[in-house]
Length: 66
Image (tube, rainbow, N blue to C red; front, top):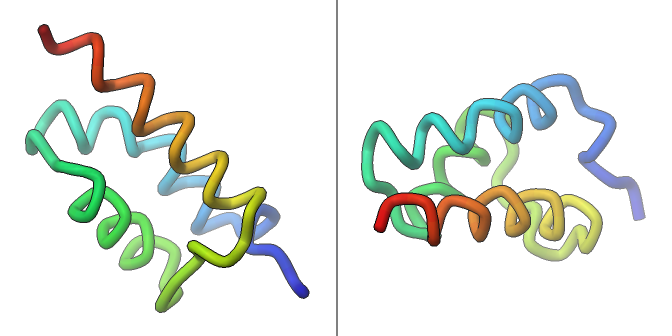
């Protein structure tokens, strides 16, 4: 299986994800859809490395807005 983690558009989306979440109040589904849109892919949930990168960033935002 080919991974998306080396795709520059995916990396850029992951780098901007925290700001996107804080700016929009995005939930996990909205954040996921935004990353897919930015990376121009239909899904990456089956790519464990990519999902882990995404979820680590998403999870890091959940305790910071309280």
